[in-house]
Amino acid sequence: MSENKEALLRELIDKYAKLYMKLACNSGVSSENAEDIVMEAFWSFYKSDSFGHLSEEETKIVVANAVKNICRDFAERKSECKKPDWMNTAMGWS
Image (tube, rainbow, N blue to C red; front, side, top):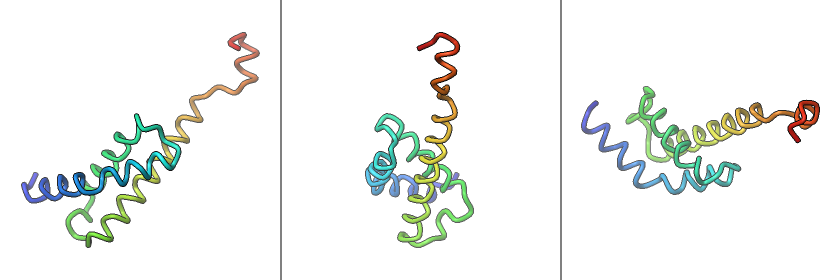
């Protein structure tokens, strides 16, 4: 890893992580999961070909969209894990 890329990543995280954590929490994610989602978004952007080539405003938009998409995926996975009420009743788990 290039030190310049690492420094840029650290700078972006320091500057915007709280903003994106608030976005994640406002998307219905618990605060416990928000940090993981935000770090996943930053890491995904870091690994992309766009990292270091976009303006600060474009970077903010890309990372915000990544956070929203990861939140959506997280909610979908979470809902898939829940068993329907009829299944709980049929199995005597209620």
